[in-house]
Image (cartoon, rainbow over all chains, first blue to last red; front, side, top):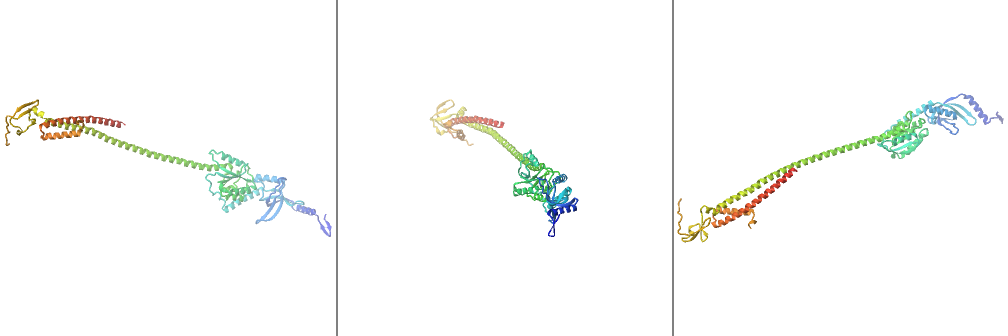
Length: 425
Length: 73
């Protein structure tokens, strides 16, 4: 009861607070549906209770703020509903529609005791956030930015944003390392949280680190998997999606889920959906290059063979031309030689024959001139003192003469000389 | 000396003798000498010519054989 002090009615603090508690309890008897942004969830893992900070903003300014309490049992129930209905745990930074009792506690003061949260409203909010992210990126002209980048012909150097223990990452490596063509790629792992609210900043931070040395990589791969379809709304976040869209090298996503495509996946250079498909996509790139190389080498081989065949043909033609011409030339020369040979035989024999005839002719003349033949026909040689005479003037009457015949000589004496009668005819 | 004389020289001498004989101004005694000389020269020429003939025959035969061989190739 209040006490009277110097004509003043004085209440104790507990009396005031109990009065307020009573008034509030009488005034706000039922549960109310309230719309507010949950700025912070303030979940204490030890006790399991949450103490969410609630806000209302108008034109970016906080116009109302209130503390709230979400007891462990309620939190667990609501969180289960959220996961089942929208695939997302209860998270902060989103406008919610919740049912709460308005309460006042002398010790803890004024607060809203949340007993239920409408997941379908939150779903709408999440969809709204996603649409807004897409709209903003499109109006800034960034939505297609990453897709327009040139992709490396052979993506050999990969920056991977993932978790070492991720099943998705294991699937990815299993396919890359098991490829039958022996394609190899080098990679650097940039560990990050891949789901839930904290993944946004975690991934952005790693993207920033990669961006500092982006020339060292051909592409960035964000790989997740095996974590179920929970906590993926972070991939609709405007900041994360923008970081991916404006990234200087292609970003590939293999987040692995069965729900709708997230904004990050939409703006990425390529959304492979699962880590396995991401691995296949990279191998296909290697393969495309290898096929072109094979085709090129085949064409080189074919073209070279063609050149060799051509040159061989040309050489063979030359060889046969040379051989044919030589043979013709040889045949010609042989026939010339044969003719010369024939001529030689004919003319050398002829020449010798001519010489023989000439000699026979001379022989005949010599024989004819031989005085022995004349003597056989009755002619004889008359000599005076060993000198053959052919004129009367060479002898005188009484001279001793010798008359030469074929088989001997007659010795005689000149008795008279008789001159030959001159005839006028 | 006569054996060393070649065909051309022997033949020329022979012709000179023939020309002299044909001219008819050789005394009988000289004529006998000339004829003896001519007979010797004729023998020499005939011998040389025969020698040449067999040599040429031999060479031609060889030539023919060579040609036959090269044609066979």
